[in-house]
Length: 244
Image 1: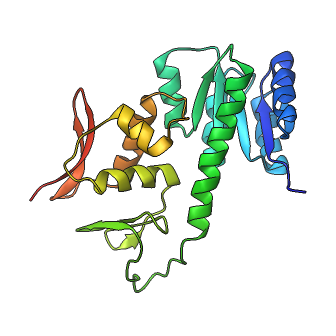
Image 2: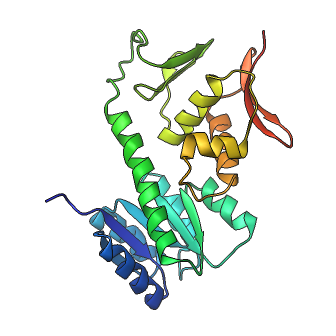
Image 3: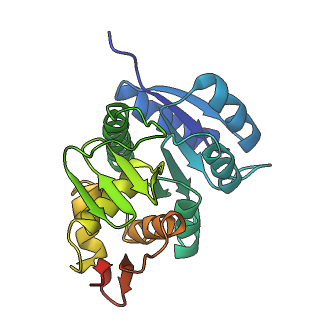
């Protein structure tokens, strides 16, 4: 029998937490409930969840703090839960490393669908990374498979590797896929909606701010080169600009 995927539910409202656990248990997930941020960090190590459902408003360490601490050591998927609906709260959660954001009150079918979608994307990305070859320090290998290459940058979508300025650069799957897609269509402008569909898929229920956050992360790791760079086309979207 296959191992059940484990979901850590972090919410100080016990009624809501138990309701979420009921939904997920019916879908054959193993769940565990904690009611504050400190307990979440403790159970994260012992329970080793495949995904975390994390409420923002928690006693003690809030959801932002929990997400920040977990992201120091792990890329485990995190879906934030909150009654807050401001754009600022969503963007801050995504910038701290959350994978999705669900507003309360939520529909049970939507919650389950988002959990499955995030787990599917994460699992597919991990499989690709696990199949990547070992990363020797010297020399760099001859590229094989599907890749794009520019001066000081090579992005390989087959083995999920990025070589930047002569060294391997660790990058989460979605960031790499976004970079590869843009770089494989140089000077072509894509709207945020188009990038959501191409990278996250038609079943993704997040909003276009997700694209902005991932672009910001890419720019923090890869600086614009003299002949190429990730360019914002104001009012439209983004392109990988190649200057000849």
